[in-house]
Length: 417
Image (cartoon, rainbow, N blue to C red):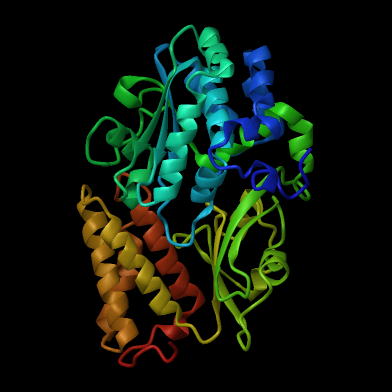
C-alpha cells in the first residue's frame, strides 16, 4: 500500500509509458476488482466520497450513475486533460508521468457505464504528456485486461488520444463535446447535460484527469481506506499546485483538509526571503481571494466554500506584501478576455472592458468614472454567458475590490511592483 500522502504521485508508479512496470507496482488490480463486479463500481465511489477534482467538486458517483442510467446504450467516456488556467499544473504531471494510472481509471469508468469509446482529451501544448499518453494507449491495445473489459461491455472499446484546441475555453465540458465532434470549442447551454446527451448525442461521462487517477486506488483498496486518507471530515488526497512568492513552489499531494497555512509555510517552505504573506488566489485566478485571516482554513471543498471561495483545481497562487493586487488581477482578466470564445457578447465585451479599466487603474490613468464602471460591470455581467468564464472573471475582480479597496487608486499608478 502506498503512503498516506503519496497515492497519485508515488515514485513507484511514475514510470512513464511502461505498462509492465505499472502492473508490477500493483497497477491493474483496481481494474481487476471492477471486472469481478462491475455493478459495485459506482456504489464504491459513493461510499468513498470521491468528488470531481477539476474545479466544481461534484460527487463523482452521481455523474457516473446518470450516464449509466441513460436509455441510449451507445455511451462515451472523456478524460478532460485540457488544463490551461494560470497556476494549475497537476494534470500534465499525471498524464506525463503516470499515464497508465489515468487510463486504468478511464477503463473502469467505461466498464461502470458500459461505454464503447474513451477519449483522452489532452492539451497539445503539453507536448510530453501528449506523447506519453499515445505510447501508453498503444501498450494497452492487446492486453488481456482490455479484452476482458470489452467482453464485459459486449463491444470493441475505442481508446483514442484526442489533442484539444489548446484554448482555455476548450476545457468547459460542453466545449469538450464540440471539439470532439470536430467543431470550434463553443460551450453549449445546459440542459441537456452531457451525461444525457453529449458526444454525437450519446450519454457522455466527462471527468478531470485527477478524478480518474483516483479511481483505480479506490477499487483496489476500498472506500474506507480512501476516506481515512483525509483530515477531519474531508476524504482522500488532493493535488495542490503551489506557485507564487513561496520558497518551494511545486506540486504537492496532501490529505484533503490540509490547512492552507501548512501548505504554504511547511510544505512550501514559507514566503520568499524578506516577504510577508498578503493573499492567495485559490483554485486558480477565478475565485475569491483569501488573506491572512484565512490561513487556518482546511483545504477541502466545503471548508473553502465556507470562506466564500472555492478549492477549484487546487491551484494556490501566493502573493506577498509589496505585490500589486490590481496588477495581478489585471493580468488574469486579460487572460480571460483572450480566452473568451466570443459566442456570448457580454462575456467577450465585458472581459475586454474590465481588462481595459484595470489597466487604467494600475497605470494611474483612471478617473472616478472608470472605477464606477468597474463596479457596475461586476453587477450586470454575472450569468450572462453560456459557461462560467465571465462569472469567474467577475468573482476575482469583485473580491479584489472588496478586500483591497485601497489599491484601487484614482489618478496615480499602483505604488508597488
